[in-house]
Image (cartoon, rainbow, N blue to C red):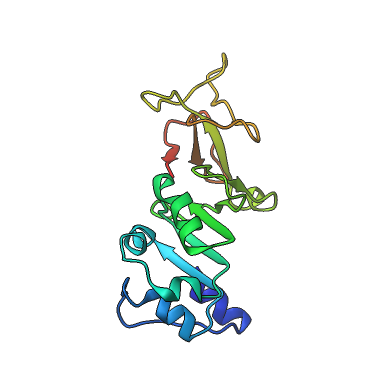
Length: 174
């Protein structure tokens, strides 16, 4: 996601041979990085490091990636003074383009208004405990409405010919 877009638009990319949590912020300062991309537990590894002076001297304003746990989100933002987090979801199952750029910890974000026409996905409601799909009286999945909040949402991936009622629909969890 990150490197491809940088190459496409001619943006400088800094790639290290091997990730180093102890040298990460030093590298950001050295190379004047303004955006970082994270995956999985990298943010938690950075938080586990002792305080460094380079944490206060970097220029990073945006962190984008997937896998930032809600329990580490606020501490990561505060400690490293990151102005904006862009967390995307469904990267294991597919690149389903659900993106949280509003800074709301744990929110699944939104789907672009233009993507459903050629890459149809929907947010639907699930039961909180067992994560079973909630269905209306006609047996169709119940869509999540914007800002409905809570842990009762999940993404359902649909092929262009599929309906929300088909059992073959795949659940994608953040």
